[in-house]
Length: 101
Image 1 (cartoon, rainbow, N blue to C red):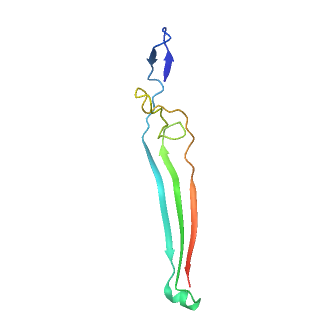
Image 2: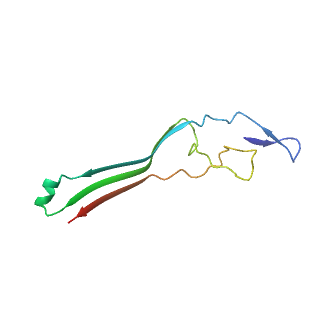
Image 3: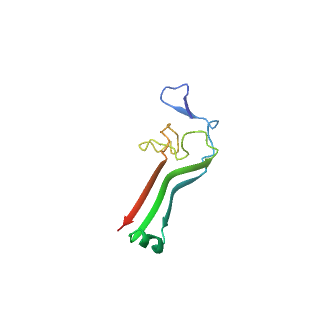
């Protein structure tokens, strides 16, 4: 957290806004099931598979911001890890079905 000091060109660093940024993220999970061929022959199919993939499923943290992987201003090496309130990552799900006749 930065605040202006008495001089307009200098800054004073305060530690009162520093947080623990440790986290555990469940990022990519895929689950699928391929049906038994004996069942599929009755339905005149060679292969059938269903699947679901989830991205950014959970984040376990005590960090109070949107995302513990904070956005930074890359051009300024003095402020690494400063959170500039970037948007949180989206959670996505993909469902699928693969059939071979």
